[in-house]
Each structure stands twice: as C-alpha cells, then as structure tokens.
Amino acid sequence: MTLLIGLIYGGWMYIDRYTDVRGGRSSSCLRRLSIWSIVSNYFPIKLIKTEDLDPNRNYIFGYHPHGALTFGAGINFLTEATHFSTLFPGICPHLMILRFQFLVPFSRELFLNLGACRVSRESCQYFLNGSSGQGNAVVIVCGGMRELYLTEYQTMIFYLKKRKGFIRLALENGASLVPVISFGENEHYRRYKNWISNRWIWGRSIIGYLPVRHPVTTVVGKPIHVNQIIDPSQTDIDQLHYQYLQAIEQLYNINKANYGLEHVKLKII
Image (cartoon, rainbow, N blue to C red; front, top):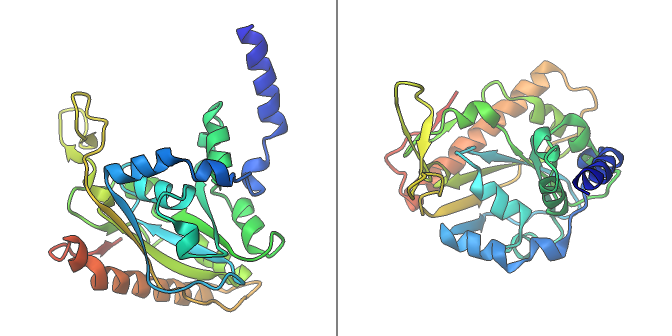
C-alpha cells in the first residue's frame, strides 16, 4: 500500500512538475487560516505600507535581509496574517523560493497553494510580462543563500552589489521595483563559533531550533517605476541598480531608529 501511494503521488508530481513556474495555484482559504495569525503573533510580525500601489502595474519586491529562516517574507507574503490584501488591494504577492522545496512530497502542495513559485527567470516572466494580467508582485529574497551565511544578531548586511538579475527583469518587463526591509529578521537566532564551524545558529528551547521571540516589522518602501527596455544595455542595468541601492539605503536610514537599530549601520556588499 505504501509503495502504491508513493507511485501514485510520484506520478502526480511528474504531471504537475511545471506548476511552480506557471503561477502556482494560490488558495485564498488556505492563506487566511487562523494558524498563520498564531504564528505571526508569536514574534509578532507586522507589515507597514509607505505608499499605495497601483493594481494596474506589476511589481518586483526586493526583500531584505534573508535572515536565518525568512519568517517575515513567509508570513507577510504567503498568508493574510498581516492583512496584505487590505493594505494593498488588487495586488497579488508571489514569494519566489528555491526549486528543491517543490521536490519534497506534500510540503510542495502547501507552498503551491500559498502562492509560492520557483525563483527562476521563467517563473518571474510569467507574472511580469503581462500574460497573467496586472497587479502581480513577485517577491524575491535578493541576497539568497549568500546573505543567509552573513546573518548575524544585531547586524544588517545585504548581499546586493552583484545581484542584478532582478534589475534586468524589471527593465525587460517595465515592472516597478519596490524595496522591502524586515527589521528584526536577524534577531531570531544567534550564531556561535565552535571547533566545527562558525555557522552554528541557536534559538530557544533545549534543541535550539525554536526561534527567539522578537518583533519583525516589514516595511514596504516606495516603488521605483521603470520604463520598459526590451533589450537593456549593461549601462541601463547599472544605472537602475544604483538607483535601487540608494532607495534601499534611504528606506533603512529613515526607519532604523523606529525598530531599535539606530546604532547599526547598513552594509551592502
């Protein structure tokens, strides 16, 4: 029986293998389950809007920092626990995550039904090129795994200087860039050095995996509206990238004192 179930589900995964690059299958009912509010209130997690977003445009949200497990991105953009749809009516968020998370049986169904999709060029283009309409917000954790390894308690380090793929996507599709910073994302675990590695992280409880309770406030900045350039030059990409770096630095400096990081200088590497 176990083998039969495995074969049936394996066949389903094969048939359904392209869904994670073709929009997923977001379920409003699943996104609104009360369990997500319980998770959100544990920290607690809060979503702040600085400016209205036009539902007749598509957006790329650049999310920073990665943190240990990216709790802020998951709760704010995969669920309605922080009332995303109320704050941004007409905007549908899609958190882009690594492909291997869609290779794990059953958990892939959860991610797909929460609106997550694979972080790839093909997947992003699906939402940004207009074929799936307007009002899409592709959420990319720009620093990726490189930024994960830079996560430190009471620091703010963005691995961003070499990240220009999302800038090219914005130019090719005329999608607006929106800087997003989660204050408190790096405070859920602490890193301790040991004889094996300097990447050991520890939370609370006897096993150390439960994150420390610390508020997370995700601030969605002002959009940078982008004129479409079908084949952008390297100069076009570099100019918009510089503009984005300026915007993310400004967003951090304006808000850091509000969330206990006035003594922490932003490092962009």
